[in-house]
Image (cartoon, rainbow, N blue to C red):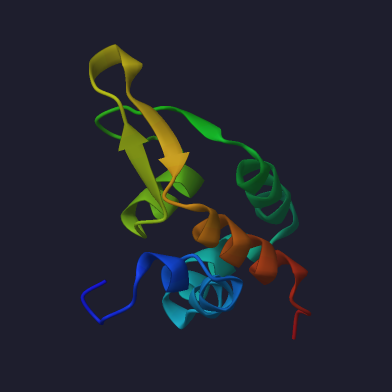
Length: 103
């Protein structure tokens, strides 16, 4: 919005695709997409709307990496605090990383 983009433009598929290809997003997802078990876990997480209970310190390495990478966030407070994907574009980026040919 600060760059003069209106709501309609921000919702466009072209912009979402461009944002999903962001090197910043890929840098956070790539380490999780490298190994078999971590890769499959990432695929499961990307399909989930609710990623679990938010705690003051996330003991799960994958969720902690996603949180500090600003890809997931907390909704709610107290005992009702839950982890969720920041937006569908972030999830789309993760799926793009998983679907990209490995080199």
